[in-house]
Image 1: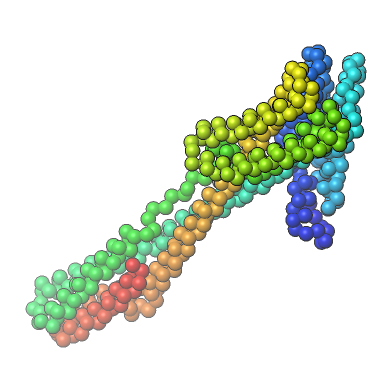
Image 2: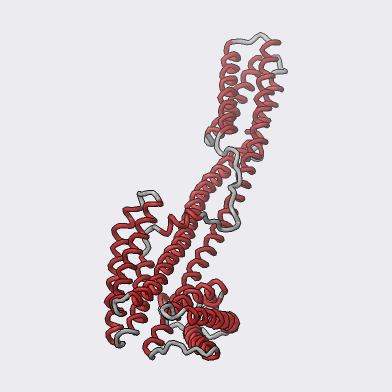
Length: 467
Protein backbone atom coordinates (compact mmCIF):
# COMPACT_ATOMS: atom_id res chain seq x y z
CA UNK A 1 0.00 0.00 0.00
CA UNK A 2 1.31 3.45 -0.86
CA UNK A 3 2.32 5.46 2.17
CA UNK A 4 0.47 8.71 2.92
CA UNK A 5 2.50 11.77 2.08
CA UNK A 6 0.72 14.68 3.74
CA UNK A 7 2.74 15.93 6.68
CA UNK A 8 -0.16 17.70 8.44
CA UNK A 9 -1.92 14.44 9.36
CA UNK A 10 -1.15 13.12 12.84
CA UNK A 11 0.01 9.48 13.19
CA UNK A 12 -3.30 8.19 14.58
CA UNK A 13 -5.33 9.70 11.74
CA UNK A 14 -2.79 8.43 9.27
CA UNK A 15 -3.08 4.86 10.58
CA UNK A 16 -6.88 5.14 10.49
CA UNK A 17 -6.84 6.28 6.87
CA UNK A 18 -4.40 3.54 5.97
CA UNK A 19 -6.67 0.93 7.55
CA UNK A 20 -9.74 2.29 5.77
CA UNK A 21 -7.99 2.48 2.41
CA UNK A 22 -6.09 -0.77 2.65
CA UNK A 23 -5.78 -3.25 -0.16
CA UNK A 24 -7.73 -5.65 2.08
CA UNK A 25 -10.91 -3.78 1.15
CA UNK A 26 -10.74 -5.33 -2.30
CA UNK A 27 -9.71 -8.93 -1.79
CA UNK A 28 -12.14 -11.76 -2.49
CA UNK A 29 -12.66 -13.03 1.11
CA UNK A 30 -13.44 -9.53 2.38
CA UNK A 31 -15.88 -8.72 -0.39
CA UNK A 32 -17.52 -12.17 -0.29
CA UNK A 33 -18.18 -12.06 3.46
CA UNK A 34 -19.46 -8.50 3.27
CA UNK A 35 -21.73 -9.38 0.35
CA UNK A 36 -23.16 -12.38 2.23
CA UNK A 37 -23.93 -10.31 5.34
CA UNK A 38 -25.44 -7.49 3.31
CA UNK A 39 -27.53 -9.93 1.26
CA UNK A 40 -28.92 -11.57 4.39
CA UNK A 41 -29.86 -8.17 5.77
CA UNK A 42 -31.64 -7.19 2.55
CA UNK A 43 -33.51 -10.49 2.30
CA UNK A 44 -34.98 -10.13 5.79
CA UNK A 45 -36.94 -7.14 4.48
CA UNK A 46 -38.61 -9.52 2.02
CA UNK A 47 -39.01 -12.37 4.52
CA UNK A 48 -42.60 -11.40 5.39
CA UNK A 49 -43.74 -11.61 1.74
CA UNK A 50 -45.02 -14.64 -0.09
CA UNK A 51 -42.73 -17.53 -0.89
CA UNK A 52 -42.37 -16.88 -4.62
CA UNK A 53 -41.54 -13.23 -4.10
CA UNK A 54 -38.88 -14.20 -1.55
CA UNK A 55 -37.30 -16.73 -3.92
CA UNK A 56 -37.17 -14.23 -6.76
CA UNK A 57 -35.77 -11.54 -4.50
CA UNK A 58 -33.11 -13.97 -3.26
CA UNK A 59 -32.06 -14.69 -6.85
CA UNK A 60 -31.96 -10.97 -7.64
CA UNK A 61 -29.79 -10.32 -4.57
CA UNK A 62 -27.36 -13.07 -5.55
CA UNK A 63 -27.00 -11.73 -9.10
CA UNK A 64 -26.58 -8.11 -8.04
CA UNK A 65 -24.08 -8.95 -5.29
CA UNK A 66 -22.00 -11.16 -7.58
CA UNK A 67 -21.73 -8.29 -10.08
CA UNK A 68 -20.98 -5.88 -7.23
CA UNK A 69 -18.16 -8.06 -5.88
CA UNK A 70 -16.70 -8.53 -9.36
CA UNK A 71 -16.81 -4.78 -9.99
CA UNK A 72 -15.12 -3.98 -6.67
CA UNK A 73 -12.41 -6.56 -7.33
CA UNK A 74 -11.64 -5.09 -10.75
CA UNK A 75 -11.81 -1.42 -9.77
CA UNK A 76 -10.04 -2.10 -6.47
CA UNK A 77 -6.98 -3.41 -8.28
CA UNK A 78 -6.93 -0.23 -10.33
CA UNK A 79 -7.30 2.05 -7.29
CA UNK A 80 -4.58 0.20 -5.34
CA UNK A 81 -2.05 1.19 -8.01
CA UNK A 82 -2.92 4.89 -7.99
CA UNK A 83 -0.47 7.27 -6.30
CA UNK A 84 -3.14 9.42 -4.64
CA UNK A 85 -1.90 9.64 -1.03
CA UNK A 86 -4.55 10.74 1.48
CA UNK A 87 -7.23 10.77 -1.22
CA UNK A 88 -7.11 6.98 -1.24
CA UNK A 89 -9.51 6.76 1.73
CA UNK A 90 -12.00 9.08 0.05
CA UNK A 91 -11.80 7.16 -3.22
CA UNK A 92 -12.28 3.82 -1.46
CA UNK A 93 -15.32 4.97 0.52
CA UNK A 94 -16.82 6.71 -2.53
CA UNK A 95 -16.30 3.60 -4.65
CA UNK A 96 -18.04 1.37 -2.09
CA UNK A 97 -20.92 3.84 -1.77
CA UNK A 98 -21.41 4.27 -5.52
CA UNK A 99 -21.19 0.60 -6.35
CA UNK A 100 -23.61 -0.31 -3.54
CA UNK A 101 -26.04 2.26 -4.93
CA UNK A 102 -25.55 0.69 -8.35
CA UNK A 103 -26.09 -2.75 -6.80
CA UNK A 104 -29.38 -1.63 -5.24
CA UNK A 105 -30.54 -0.15 -8.54
CA UNK A 106 -29.58 -3.36 -10.34
CA UNK A 107 -31.41 -5.47 -7.72
CA UNK A 108 -34.62 -3.48 -8.16
CA UNK A 109 -34.24 -3.46 -11.96
CA UNK A 110 -33.96 -7.27 -11.98
CA UNK A 111 -37.13 -7.60 -9.91
CA UNK A 112 -39.02 -5.25 -12.25
CA UNK A 113 -37.75 -7.21 -15.24
CA UNK A 114 -39.47 -10.22 -13.66
CA UNK A 115 -42.69 -8.21 -13.24
CA UNK A 116 -42.17 -7.89 -9.47
CA UNK A 117 -42.33 -4.57 -7.70
CA UNK A 118 -39.62 -4.04 -5.06
CA UNK A 119 -40.58 -2.91 -1.59
CA UNK A 120 -40.65 0.89 -1.61
CA UNK A 121 -38.09 2.60 0.59
CA UNK A 122 -37.76 6.18 1.79
CA UNK A 123 -34.54 8.15 1.43
CA UNK A 124 -33.90 7.60 5.15
CA UNK A 125 -34.21 3.84 4.75
CA UNK A 126 -31.97 3.85 1.71
CA UNK A 127 -29.40 6.01 3.53
CA UNK A 128 -29.40 3.65 6.54
CA UNK A 129 -29.06 0.63 4.26
CA UNK A 130 -26.22 2.26 2.33
CA UNK A 131 -24.42 3.32 5.52
CA UNK A 132 -24.78 -0.21 6.91
CA UNK A 133 -23.42 -1.72 3.70
CA UNK A 134 -20.44 0.65 3.76
CA UNK A 135 -19.81 -0.19 7.41
CA UNK A 136 -19.89 -3.92 6.58
CA UNK A 137 -17.44 -3.61 3.68
CA UNK A 138 -15.05 -1.32 5.57
CA UNK A 139 -15.42 -3.40 8.73
CA UNK A 140 -14.44 -6.63 7.05
CA UNK A 141 -11.60 -4.83 5.32
CA UNK A 142 -10.37 -3.53 8.68
CA UNK A 143 -10.60 -7.00 10.24
CA UNK A 144 -8.59 -8.52 7.40
CA UNK A 145 -6.14 -5.63 7.66
CA UNK A 146 -5.55 -6.35 11.35
CA UNK A 147 -5.46 -10.11 10.81
CA UNK A 148 -3.12 -9.74 7.83
CA UNK A 149 -0.84 -7.50 9.87
CA UNK A 150 -0.78 -10.04 12.69
CA UNK A 151 -0.05 -12.88 10.28
CA UNK A 152 2.78 -10.90 8.70
CA UNK A 153 4.26 -10.23 12.13
CA UNK A 154 3.87 -13.89 13.04
CA UNK A 155 5.70 -14.79 9.83
CA UNK A 156 8.47 -12.30 10.63
CA UNK A 157 8.71 -13.67 14.17
CA UNK A 158 9.00 -17.23 12.84
CA UNK A 159 11.73 -16.25 10.41
CA UNK A 160 13.54 -14.38 13.17
CA UNK A 161 13.22 -17.39 15.46
CA UNK A 162 14.54 -19.67 12.73
CA UNK A 163 17.51 -17.34 12.13
CA UNK A 164 18.26 -17.16 15.84
CA UNK A 165 18.01 -20.94 16.12
CA UNK A 166 20.44 -21.43 13.24
CA UNK A 167 22.82 -18.95 14.80
CA UNK A 168 22.52 -20.78 18.13
CA UNK A 169 23.35 -24.04 16.42
CA UNK A 170 26.34 -22.53 14.62
CA UNK A 171 27.78 -20.99 17.80
CA UNK A 172 27.22 -24.20 19.74
CA UNK A 173 29.04 -26.20 17.07
CA UNK A 174 31.92 -23.73 17.09
CA UNK A 175 32.19 -24.01 20.87
CA UNK A 176 32.10 -27.81 20.79
CA UNK A 177 34.64 -27.97 17.94
CA UNK A 178 37.03 -25.66 19.78
CA UNK A 179 36.58 -27.65 22.97
CA UNK A 180 37.10 -30.95 21.22
CA UNK A 181 40.40 -29.87 19.71
CA UNK A 182 41.74 -28.02 22.77
CA UNK A 183 40.66 -30.58 25.35
CA UNK A 184 42.10 -33.40 23.27
CA UNK A 185 45.45 -31.59 23.05
CA UNK A 186 45.50 -30.88 26.78
CA UNK A 187 44.60 -34.49 27.59
CA UNK A 188 47.38 -35.75 25.33
CA UNK A 189 49.91 -33.48 27.02
CA UNK A 190 48.69 -34.59 30.48
CA UNK A 191 49.07 -38.24 29.52
CA UNK A 192 52.49 -37.52 28.05
CA UNK A 193 53.58 -35.73 31.23
CA UNK A 194 52.27 -38.48 33.51
CA UNK A 195 54.01 -41.11 31.36
CA UNK A 196 57.29 -39.20 31.53
CA UNK A 197 57.01 -38.94 35.33
CA UNK A 198 56.26 -42.67 35.66
CA UNK A 199 59.26 -43.59 33.51
CA UNK A 200 61.53 -41.24 35.38
CA UNK A 201 60.36 -42.50 38.80
CA UNK A 202 60.94 -46.14 37.74
CA UNK A 203 64.44 -45.57 36.38
CA UNK A 204 65.94 -43.15 38.92
CA UNK A 205 66.37 -42.82 42.66
CA UNK A 206 64.50 -39.70 43.72
CA UNK A 207 65.32 -37.41 46.61
CA UNK A 208 62.56 -35.95 48.75
CA UNK A 209 62.50 -32.55 47.03
CA UNK A 210 62.00 -34.13 43.61
CA UNK A 211 59.30 -36.44 45.01
CA UNK A 212 57.45 -33.44 46.47
CA UNK A 213 57.55 -31.57 43.17
CA UNK A 214 56.38 -34.65 41.28
CA UNK A 215 53.50 -35.14 43.76
CA UNK A 216 52.49 -31.50 43.37
CA UNK A 217 52.69 -31.77 39.57
CA UNK A 218 50.54 -34.92 39.58
CA UNK A 219 47.99 -33.18 41.80
CA UNK A 220 47.87 -30.22 39.42
CA UNK A 221 47.46 -32.52 36.45
CA UNK A 222 44.60 -34.36 38.15
CA UNK A 223 42.91 -31.04 38.91
CA UNK A 224 43.36 -29.89 35.31
CA UNK A 225 41.96 -33.18 34.03
CA UNK A 226 38.95 -32.77 36.33
CA UNK A 227 38.38 -29.21 35.12
CA UNK A 228 38.69 -30.28 31.51
CA UNK A 229 36.04 -32.97 32.03
CA UNK A 230 33.79 -30.35 33.62
CA UNK A 231 34.13 -28.14 30.55
CA UNK A 232 33.47 -31.06 28.20
CA UNK A 233 30.29 -32.11 30.00
CA UNK A 234 28.99 -28.63 30.80
CA UNK A 235 26.79 -26.17 28.91
CA UNK A 236 26.16 -26.05 26.03
CA UNK A 237 24.89 -29.55 25.48
CA UNK A 238 23.40 -30.92 22.27
CA UNK A 239 21.23 -28.31 20.55
CA UNK A 240 18.41 -29.14 18.20
CA UNK A 241 16.69 -26.81 15.80
CA UNK A 242 13.14 -26.17 17.04
CA UNK A 243 10.42 -27.27 14.65
CA UNK A 244 8.75 -24.12 13.36
CA UNK A 245 5.74 -24.41 11.09
CA UNK A 246 6.00 -22.27 7.97
CA UNK A 247 2.24 -21.72 8.00
CA UNK A 248 0.06 -20.45 10.78
CA UNK A 249 -2.09 -23.27 12.08
CA UNK A 250 -5.14 -22.86 14.25
CA UNK A 251 -7.13 -25.48 16.06
CA UNK A 252 -10.90 -25.11 16.12
CA UNK A 253 -11.00 -25.43 19.90
CA UNK A 254 -8.25 -22.81 20.21
CA UNK A 255 -10.17 -20.29 18.10
CA UNK A 256 -13.42 -20.93 19.97
CA UNK A 257 -11.59 -20.58 23.28
CA UNK A 258 -10.07 -17.28 22.14
CA UNK A 259 -13.47 -16.05 20.96
CA UNK A 260 -14.80 -16.28 24.53
CA UNK A 261 -12.07 -14.03 25.92
CA UNK A 262 -12.94 -10.40 26.78
CA UNK A 263 -13.15 -8.37 23.57
CA UNK A 264 -14.10 -4.70 23.76
CA UNK A 265 -14.25 -4.43 19.96
CA UNK A 266 -17.13 -6.91 19.91
CA UNK A 267 -19.14 -4.63 22.22
CA UNK A 268 -18.73 -1.69 19.85
CA UNK A 269 -19.54 -3.88 16.86
CA UNK A 270 -22.77 -5.09 18.46
CA UNK A 271 -23.88 -1.55 19.32
CA UNK A 272 -23.27 -0.32 15.74
CA UNK A 273 -25.08 -3.31 14.23
CA UNK A 274 -27.94 -2.76 16.67
CA UNK A 275 -28.22 0.88 15.65
CA UNK A 276 -28.41 0.09 11.93
CA UNK A 277 -30.71 -2.88 12.53
CA UNK A 278 -33.20 -1.06 14.73
CA UNK A 279 -33.22 2.06 12.55
CA UNK A 280 -33.72 0.05 9.38
CA UNK A 281 -36.53 -2.12 10.74
CA UNK A 282 -38.35 0.51 12.79
CA UNK A 283 -38.35 2.99 9.89
CA UNK A 284 -41.01 0.81 8.25
CA UNK A 285 -43.40 1.36 11.19
CA UNK A 286 -42.72 4.91 12.42
CA UNK A 287 -41.40 8.21 11.16
CA UNK A 288 -37.67 8.67 10.60
CA UNK A 289 -37.04 10.85 13.65
CA UNK A 290 -38.62 8.33 16.02
CA UNK A 291 -36.81 5.45 14.30
CA UNK A 292 -33.47 7.24 14.72
CA UNK A 293 -34.26 8.02 18.37
CA UNK A 294 -35.19 4.44 19.21
CA UNK A 295 -32.24 3.16 17.20
CA UNK A 296 -29.81 5.30 19.22
CA UNK A 297 -31.50 4.42 22.52
CA UNK A 298 -31.60 0.69 21.91
CA UNK A 299 -28.06 0.75 20.53
CA UNK A 300 -26.83 2.44 23.72
CA UNK A 301 -28.69 -0.19 25.76
CA UNK A 302 -27.05 -2.92 23.68
CA UNK A 303 -23.66 -1.40 24.37
CA UNK A 304 -24.31 -1.34 28.12
CA UNK A 305 -25.45 -4.99 28.17
CA UNK A 306 -22.43 -6.36 26.33
CA UNK A 307 -20.04 -3.95 28.01
CA UNK A 308 -21.04 -5.38 31.38
CA UNK A 309 -20.64 -8.90 30.01
CA UNK A 310 -17.16 -8.25 28.55
CA UNK A 311 -16.02 -6.18 31.54
CA UNK A 312 -17.26 -8.20 34.48
CA UNK A 313 -18.52 -11.64 33.45
CA UNK A 314 -16.17 -12.76 30.65
CA UNK A 315 -12.94 -12.36 32.72
CA UNK A 316 -14.39 -14.52 35.50
CA UNK A 317 -15.54 -17.18 33.05
CA UNK A 318 -11.96 -17.68 31.82
CA UNK A 319 -11.41 -19.97 34.79
CA UNK A 320 -14.29 -22.18 33.67
CA UNK A 321 -14.24 -24.96 31.09
CA UNK A 322 -14.80 -23.99 27.45
CA UNK A 323 -18.35 -25.35 27.19
CA UNK A 324 -19.50 -23.15 30.09
CA UNK A 325 -17.92 -20.06 28.51
CA UNK A 326 -19.64 -20.80 25.19
CA UNK A 327 -22.97 -21.43 26.92
CA UNK A 328 -22.70 -18.16 28.86
CA UNK A 329 -21.95 -16.12 25.74
CA UNK A 330 -24.73 -17.74 23.73
CA UNK A 331 -27.14 -17.26 26.62
CA UNK A 332 -26.38 -13.53 26.68
CA UNK A 333 -26.72 -13.27 22.88
CA UNK A 334 -29.98 -15.23 22.75
CA UNK A 335 -31.43 -13.28 25.69
CA UNK A 336 -30.49 -10.02 24.04
CA UNK A 337 -31.95 -11.11 20.70
CA UNK A 338 -35.16 -12.18 22.45
CA UNK A 339 -35.35 -8.64 23.77
CA UNK A 340 -34.58 -7.46 20.19
CA UNK A 341 -37.39 -9.67 18.88
CA UNK A 342 -39.90 -8.32 21.41
CA UNK A 343 -39.06 -4.72 20.59
CA UNK A 344 -39.23 -5.21 16.84
CA UNK A 345 -42.41 -7.27 17.06
CA UNK A 346 -44.07 -4.75 19.36
CA UNK A 347 -43.34 -1.78 17.12
CA UNK A 348 -44.25 -3.78 14.02
CA UNK A 349 -47.81 -4.38 15.20
CA UNK A 350 -47.75 -6.98 17.97
CA UNK A 351 -49.20 -9.78 15.82
CA UNK A 352 -47.96 -13.16 14.63
CA UNK A 353 -46.90 -11.92 11.21
CA UNK A 354 -44.90 -9.08 12.71
CA UNK A 355 -43.11 -11.37 15.14
CA UNK A 356 -42.37 -13.84 12.33
CA UNK A 357 -40.73 -11.12 10.23
CA UNK A 358 -38.92 -9.77 13.29
CA UNK A 359 -37.64 -13.26 14.06
CA UNK A 360 -36.17 -13.50 10.56
CA UNK A 361 -34.58 -10.08 11.01
CA UNK A 362 -33.21 -11.02 14.45
CA UNK A 363 -31.49 -14.08 12.97
CA UNK A 364 -29.03 -11.77 11.16
CA UNK A 365 -27.49 -10.25 14.30
CA UNK A 366 -27.28 -13.74 15.83
CA UNK A 367 -25.10 -14.83 12.91
CA UNK A 368 -23.28 -11.50 12.92
CA UNK A 369 -22.51 -11.53 16.66
CA UNK A 370 -21.25 -15.12 16.64
CA UNK A 371 -19.31 -14.52 13.43
CA UNK A 372 -17.77 -11.40 14.97
CA UNK A 373 -16.81 -13.39 18.07
CA UNK A 374 -15.16 -16.10 15.93
CA UNK A 375 -13.27 -13.51 13.86
CA UNK A 376 -12.19 -11.90 17.10
CA UNK A 377 -11.00 -15.32 18.25
CA UNK A 378 -8.89 -15.67 15.10
CA UNK A 379 -7.36 -12.22 15.67
CA UNK A 380 -6.71 -12.98 19.35
CA UNK A 381 -5.18 -16.36 18.45
CA UNK A 382 -2.81 -14.68 16.00
CA UNK A 383 -1.89 -12.13 18.68
CA UNK A 384 -1.30 -14.91 21.20
CA UNK A 385 0.91 -16.79 18.77
CA UNK A 386 2.84 -13.62 18.00
CA UNK A 387 3.37 -13.03 21.72
CA UNK A 388 4.48 -16.63 22.20
CA UNK A 389 6.98 -16.37 19.35
CA UNK A 390 8.22 -13.06 20.74
CA UNK A 391 8.82 -14.65 24.14
CA UNK A 392 10.63 -17.58 22.50
CA UNK A 393 12.79 -15.17 20.51
CA UNK A 394 13.59 -13.21 23.68
CA UNK A 395 14.62 -16.38 25.52
CA UNK A 396 16.65 -17.48 22.52
CA UNK A 397 18.46 -14.14 22.46
CA UNK A 398 19.36 -14.64 26.12
CA UNK A 399 20.74 -18.09 25.32
CA UNK A 400 22.68 -16.62 22.41
CA UNK A 401 24.18 -13.97 24.68
CA UNK A 402 25.31 -16.72 27.07
CA UNK A 403 26.76 -18.75 24.20
CA UNK A 404 28.58 -15.72 22.82
CA UNK A 405 30.08 -15.06 26.24
CA UNK A 406 31.13 -18.71 26.61
CA UNK A 407 32.69 -18.71 23.16
CA UNK A 408 34.53 -15.45 23.87
CA UNK A 409 35.85 -16.62 27.25
CA UNK A 410 36.93 -20.04 26.00
CA UNK A 411 38.52 -18.66 22.82
CA UNK A 412 40.75 -16.46 24.95
CA UNK A 413 41.85 -19.49 26.98
CA UNK A 414 42.43 -21.79 24.01
CA UNK A 415 44.31 -19.11 22.08
CA UNK A 416 46.47 -18.31 25.07
CA UNK A 417 47.34 -22.03 25.44
CA UNK A 418 47.95 -22.97 21.84
CA UNK A 419 48.22 -19.75 19.79
CA UNK A 420 49.77 -17.39 22.28
CA UNK A 421 53.13 -17.44 24.01
CA UNK A 422 54.62 -20.83 23.11
CA UNK A 423 56.73 -20.78 26.27
CA UNK A 424 53.58 -21.04 28.39
CA UNK A 425 51.84 -23.84 26.45
CA UNK A 426 51.23 -27.40 27.74
CA UNK A 427 53.29 -28.70 24.83
CA UNK A 428 56.32 -26.73 26.00
CA UNK A 429 55.84 -28.07 29.52
CA UNK A 430 55.83 -31.65 28.22
CA UNK A 431 58.99 -31.07 26.14
CA UNK A 432 60.83 -29.43 29.04
CA UNK A 433 59.95 -32.29 31.38
CA UNK A 434 60.91 -34.99 28.87
CA UNK A 435 64.28 -33.36 28.15
CA UNK A 436 65.06 -32.72 31.80
CA UNK A 437 64.41 -36.30 32.90
CA UNK A 438 67.13 -37.49 30.55
CA UNK A 439 69.72 -35.67 32.65
CA UNK A 440 71.46 -37.33 35.59
CA UNK A 441 71.75 -34.19 37.72
CA UNK A 442 68.96 -34.26 40.30
CA UNK A 443 69.27 -30.52 40.85
CA UNK A 444 68.71 -29.85 37.17
CA UNK A 445 65.71 -32.19 37.16
CA UNK A 446 64.32 -30.48 40.25
CA UNK A 447 64.60 -27.06 38.62
CA UNK A 448 62.95 -28.31 35.42
CA UNK A 449 60.07 -29.96 37.28
CA UNK A 450 59.50 -26.73 39.17
CA UNK A 451 59.31 -24.83 35.88
CA UNK A 452 56.92 -27.45 34.51
CA UNK A 453 54.80 -27.13 37.66
CA UNK A 454 54.69 -23.40 37.18
CA UNK A 455 53.56 -23.82 33.57
CA UNK A 456 50.79 -26.29 34.48
CA UNK A 457 49.69 -24.00 37.34
CA UNK A 458 49.28 -21.25 34.79
CA UNK A 459 47.24 -23.63 32.61
CA UNK A 460 45.07 -24.52 35.62
CA UNK A 461 44.36 -20.85 36.37
CA UNK A 462 43.36 -20.18 32.78
CA UNK A 463 41.10 -23.21 32.60
CA UNK A 464 39.54 -22.33 35.96
CA UNK A 465 38.23 -19.11 34.41
CA UNK A 466 35.97 -21.11 32.08
CA UNK A 467 34.38 -23.41 34.69
